Amino acid sequence: WWEELGIIKEMGFLTRNQPVLWFMLSTLALPEPQFSRLRIEFAKITALIFVIDDLFDVYGDDQLDDLVLFVEAFN
Image 1 (spheres, helix red, strand yellow):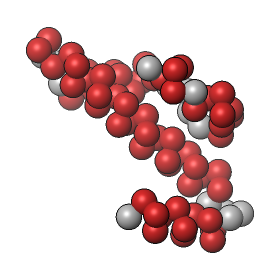
Image 2 (cartoon, one colour):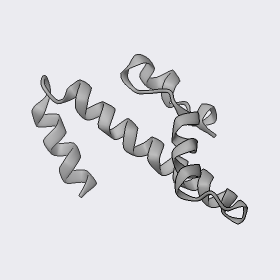
Image 3 (tube, helix red, strand yellow):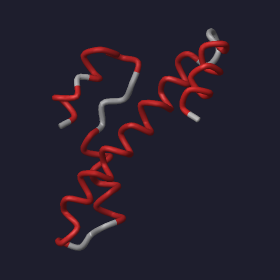
C-alpha cells in the first residue's frame, strides 16, 4: 500500500520511507492476531502523520505563510 500510494516518488527525500517501522508500532499497540487488519490501518494513519510532520520540518522555516494556510485547511 505504501509504494502504491506514490508519496516517495512525488516527494523524494522530503519524507521518511519507513513503512516497516510504522507497522511495527501498530504491532506493539495491537499484538493480538484478530487485529491484523486494524494494524494495517493504524500503520497507514501513522504514515500520514509522519508525512505531515516531515512537511512541517522541511517547509516550516522558509514558507511559514504556506504552513498557516495548510493548518487552516486541515482544521
